[in-house]
Image 1 (spheres, each protein chain N blue to C red):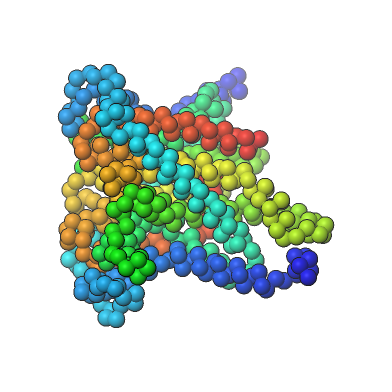
Image 2: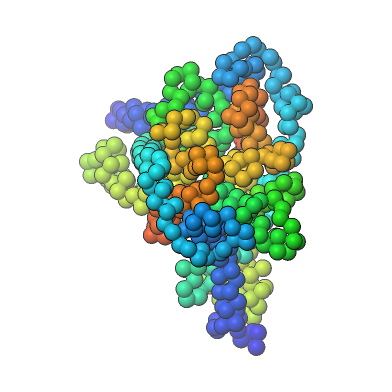
Length: 283
Length: 292
């Protein structure tokens, strides 16, 4: 009986059990988010009710309306979009050039530079925050969005370089050489040939970096004090003091901040997963 | 002659192609490390560096401050998180790899916590576990008849921080497990089936050993990640109660930006940096071993 099941045949019992366990896992995954959503849809009185209502009896959009109209949420959102876009685009461009040079140019210390970049990608942000704070105060860069962009760009560059080197190394060398023989210089071959064919991988690596920057709290909280310059990750935390922890408002703000990223993830799941696999296992 | 010219061209182009990356890394990683080393040997008042004090800051970290306690907390945090995240991740990843209709939707739902930031994760769970109005607090109240602030006892706080971390990061292991499982050739499994091996034997004797290298990578990668984590713990407990959940990384951050002891924070940063370099060298070795 058992043997029959395990050889090729269908196993409805096992499938059923698998689905039950996985549904359980997805409930655990989603529960905190749904509870946050339920809180965001409650009136102030219902939020602080004990025992709490799991599904609100009075659904109201007041919290969401306040987040959009009576707070600096939109400013934080704009700052996050600005810093993330510029930082990731610049880092990707810079890293692509570095990775190309390290893969296709015959230069001295190639392995050494490669290893150096790999090691710097592993220096943790938390070890750099304090000295960067001291330096930025000295250089008058403290509390500027330029500093945020520079820091994110610089910190994403090594990882991106490393990942793209992985992509480039896997390209068939003949294509590149054929391109060069066809009259392209190595520089031209990079823009006309290598970049276009590596584009899917580069996009997924960049996407993952974008999520990193968007989600980061440490850099944007350590180097920015002015409210108008804050990013959304820090702006959220701001609701805790600004309203003396009004959980309904806070959860509404959390929901608005994660909905774009969840939609992006559901649509581009494949790219996210590829990007992570490339970062973790190199190629 | 032609070849020599080509090589020279390559060098010049390489310099242009590499310069921006190296310049950025130099300014925002190398110089700060040097600055941290310098600061860690001096006394500071806010951002102003004062007298040279030798290794006093390091001694202070280990004696007056909670250096040892932080190290133990870090180890506890990393080990407990791995002990939970790895088995759960591999198990769910294995189940998700089965061919069942509609399983793709479940996969999407299950890995959603992965893209939520540590801030959002900590806020969502902080609210669930809120001492006055939290839903989980209410469930505990139903079970015990008492309304308890779950973060007020050291042991519970430690466990809760780990659980929240696992919730946020287990999708990484799940995704890596699925990716590794998909590289296993179906022919191999088929052959084992033909030989009459049971499902269980195939899974434990063939499948699991085949994904071991990827799991080793995940283990080291996640250890480093957990070791360097600040935001999640900071937002959930701020290191409390009585610094029982303050890890090394959190201590570096709090000494700098909560207590404004830049000298002590710099010493913490250097300790973290050195430990990371050691971890990373192990990581690179594992990657190399896998490549060969």
